Length: 139
Image (tube, rainbow, N blue to C red; front, side, top):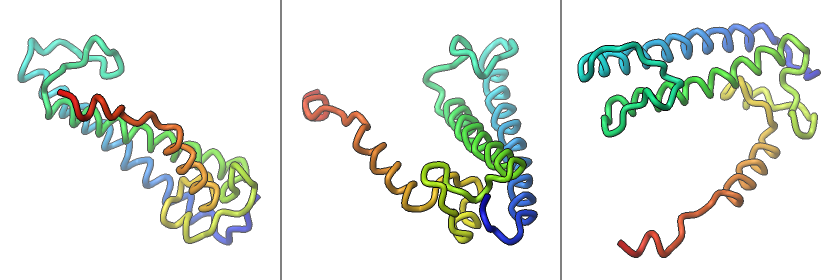
């Protein structure tokens, strides 16, 4: 367990962030639904079902992407709240060292210390599939 002085401050910040993300997800879904209702027959849409996706509508895609990102961040916030409950909040999931309080103030759902996060980011960049040069230069 981390030696962070006031976990209640982080708990409140995470709970507030959770409420804001939940509200944002609902708003994104409502906006996307409004676009569908205005442009189609208005049938109910399951935003998690690929068959209900509309291609070509930039506004619709924007709201779906926003909702997807908010859901991903909400998952991270929920995991941080669970770490608070379990007594593991503020400890790096990789090395076990304490996460700097300044990092947690900036990213309260951080699960890695800065060193481990930087290594994870570098590994992700190294394993990402770059687009082939042939595809980029030949039309």
